[in-house]
Image 1: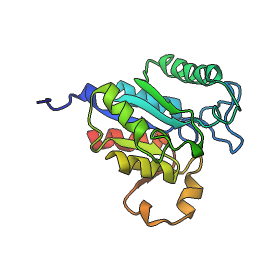
Image 2 (image 1 turned 90 degrees about the vertical axis):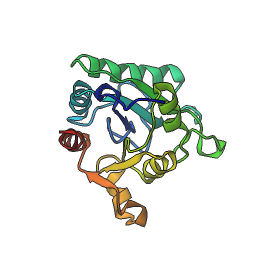
Image 3 (image 1 turned 30 degrees about the vertical axis):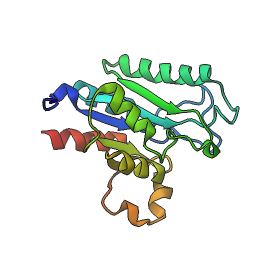
Image 4 (image 1 turned 180 degrees about the vertical axis):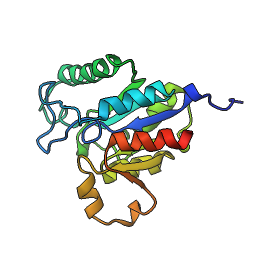
Length: 189
């Protein structure tokens, strides 16, 4: 029987594009195009310092579409890790789906595969774990995995909110990752 998680065992999962960094309908294809949203790196660092393990779950179909190679994707993720570690924070895991929408894989959000991979590799339950995203696919993935969907207005967030789908009725909504981190830290206190 597993014991209750310690404060070091708390987990928060983040989508990448539109949550941590600026998004683009033309895809983020290189480190040069990868620009953090103001306050996002600091938000990750604050959560990390408060004992949260940070994981990232991101669809990256640009790989399947031939827009960038895995080496460039890995460079973007290394850049993210470097920015966070430079301020004393840490990212526990980055999971991504390199497949296109037609692949029918289990890892492409809204399927729960990426979130389940994170839970398996980090040895934890997804029950009540916040999955912070900016799109309806993030909300659906969180629900499918048993996590708690949180939505940001950054990235595709405003478009998602404009859809007025009933799926958003009980979703926590924040202006950006910094505000979501503040709420999460306030809830724990």
